[in-house]
Length: 64
Image (cartoon, rainbow, N blue to C red; front, side):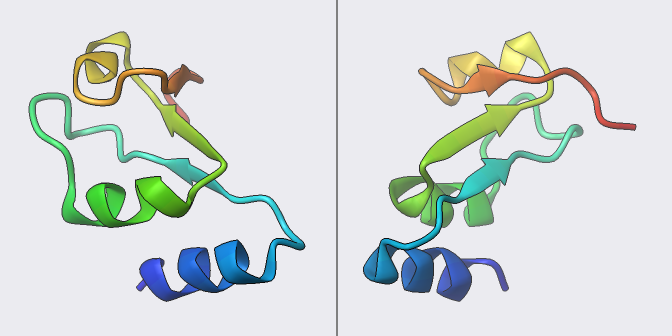
């Protein structure tokens, strides 16, 4: 559901986008993250272990 909004925001270039990966996927990426990452301005993860999957992502810590 998020992918069309990331694509639209990327095409319009008027708003910045941030994708936050879910907290329970530390061993493999989600399909939404794989599709949204090329269009996201900032990629955030909640665990340091997720940086193996997403190099260059910002660790923000758990949100829950």
